[in-house]
Image 1 (tube, rainbow, N blue to C red):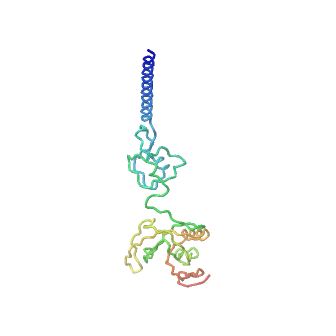
Image 2 (cartoon, rainbow, N blue to C red):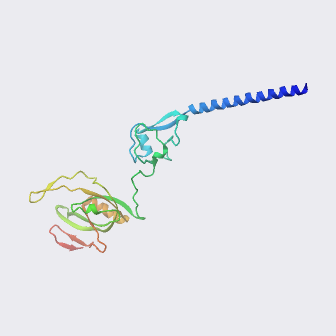
Length: 249
């Protein structure tokens, strides 16, 4: 009799444990289901986000907007916030309209673009240099150039003076096109039409004091560049006036 009671009690206990396990599993499944349906904020591109656009600008301009979707539908690595920690990162490639944005689409440098390397203690400056002799087609990062400056003599627009502005300048980047409006054909003294010439955008590295000199010359005169030979040395004191007279300062 005692054994039968013990067997019945054991069976009841096992049954209760099974019921409890089922209830616990069901409760967990319900919790997981609820969590999966809970809305989570992600960013979706409303229109194309151009490569190089910062995350903060993309949001400010409405290129991408925060959208709430069920948590279970959020892909791994989705961009869920834009704040001070990632707002300055840029789109490494174009992001298509309608795309759910993932965080890896933003980084420090757009794909295909390489940040220029500015030598320590120097300043990078870009200037548009005329290229009538097609010298610009031979300019590459690492080239060294002489920069000439032609400016009005004594404030007279018709009288020009040319000098060597900078005798040894390191080129660190060369643009593919000018930033100035497209040039138009002109007529020379004989009335013959001359072909239009474009400018070459050249980025150079200079010590701060020489950079200030270049900035001033770019604003007050017309700059011209020449490739520098290995042993060549320009005469910084030489000045050529409008009548072709050569003087030394």
